[in-house]
Image 1 (tube, rainbow, N blue to C red):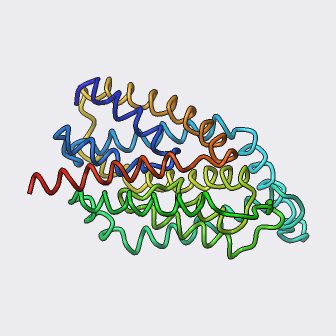
Image 2 (tube, rainbow, N blue to C red; image 1 turned 60 degrees about the horizontal axis):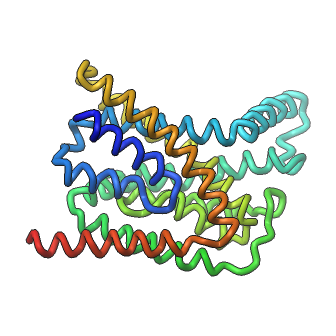
Length: 278
């Protein structure tokens, strides 16, 4: 892999991970057209996920710190016999909602891992995923009343959002778009829906890194890849920060339609290419 390819993939990973356009779909398409075998760059892919995690931690560092403090207080309450006290504060309730949302995502990922991996064998399946992403973004843009905060959010809302995140394991289906759709369908405030979507990405991305790391490091690290990986990680983190900030503004201002048009155009281009190449 060249430095230019690493830079392009890093930037795309950071942008597409948080903008509702599917990072998995875009990276798979770029690797296809670059002629790069997915297995040969598994370590690179894993490290790109680390880069995007850095983005979330930087933007939401105060929220994450508050969640960690509440975790400590929850443990203290349990040890002193007070119980979980889930509704003692919005931060604590949100923390439990994040845990609940992560469970269906993990179950879907583990049960359908082989199925999702098989979808990467065809660029047509990626196009179908992009079309699905466009549809849910189109619907999400037209959601009406959104007034729920952490204290009004129900367990069923968290489960639904977690299921949507699980579906987004499929190539071409945007994780941020799916979780945002789930949040808006649940009636969450737009700003909170975005925050929740990005915060639940932490256990999801971290879990992906943990599961893929053994295979990625099994063959050892190629010294020639250290430079491209470093460039890719840095650019993924920087572009991820830009994407998160942009997404917050876009959702608040109800301007998702541009992403709908974009993913449908990409899907149309991919389908046209597959027909011509057949």
